[in-house]
Length: 329
Image (cartoon, rainbow, N blue to C red; front, top):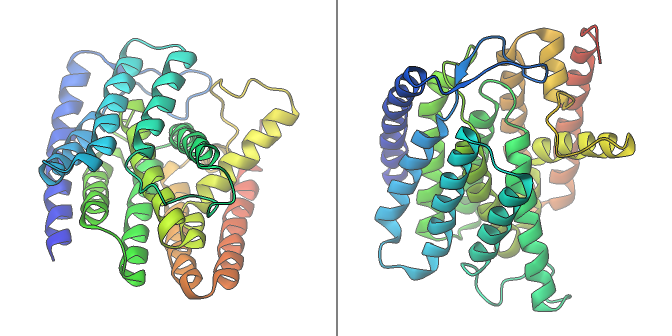
C-alpha cells in the first residue's frame, strides 16, 4: 500500500510539474525543431525529463537522508541530470558526456557490497567492477538512443520498474531503497506519459532519458548480481535486442555509431505506420509478456529465456513488416 501511495503522489506531482515545464519551455522557445532524422513534424518543447527526475530525486532524498551508501546513487543521478540538461540546451561534445557517464557509473559501483560481483569471483575484483562500469555506461546511453518516438521511454521505464518490483517481491529479497526508487520511477513516468503520449506535447530530453537509464540500469545490475540474473536480462530484452541488432548492422556498414539516425526497428516501424502510439502500444504489450517470462525464469531460467526471446522476436518481426510500408529505407 505504501508503494502505491508513493507511486500515486509521484504521478500527480510529475504530471503538474511537466505541464508547468511545458509552458515555460514553450515561452522560452526551447523546442526540438524537426530535422531529417526526427520522427516528429512540428516543434515540441524538450526537457520534460527535468520534472520527472526532480520528482524521483526528491523522493529518493527523503529516503536516503543519513544513509551514506545510497548517496552513491543519488549524487550521480543529480550530476547526470544537470549535465544532460546543459547538453539539451547548449550541446556538449561526445567526449565530455562520456566522461560524466563513466564517472557516474564508477561512483555507483561503490553502492554495491564488496562481495557482490557479476561473474561470481571468476575474474579479479577490479576487472569485474570495470565490466560493471562499462555495462552501466552502455545501458544509460542505450536508453538515450532508444528515446526516439512519443511515449516509448515512459512506457519502457514503467514496464521495467513494475517488472523489477514484482521480481524482487517474488524472490523475497531487496531493500526498501530499491522498492521506493522503483515506485517513484513508475509513478513519475506515468504522470509524464499523460503529456508525452502521441501526439506529444513535450519531450523527455537527455535530462530525463540518461538519468532514467542510469537508475534502472543500476537496479537491473544489482538484480543480476544478487537476486536473479535471468530475470534481470529478460525484463529489458526488447531494448537490448533492438539497439543491439541496429548497432551491429550499422557497424557492419561502417557507419558512425554516435550520430543520430532513424534505423532502429521501432523508428522504421513508425515510419511505415505513421503512428507513434501504435508502435508504443505493442512495445507495452510485449513488455507485459516479458515481465511474465521474467517471473517464470525465477524458477525455470531456460523456459523463461526461451519465452522472452520468442516474445522479442515476434515484436521485432512485426516492426520489420511494418517498416516495409515505408517507401524509403
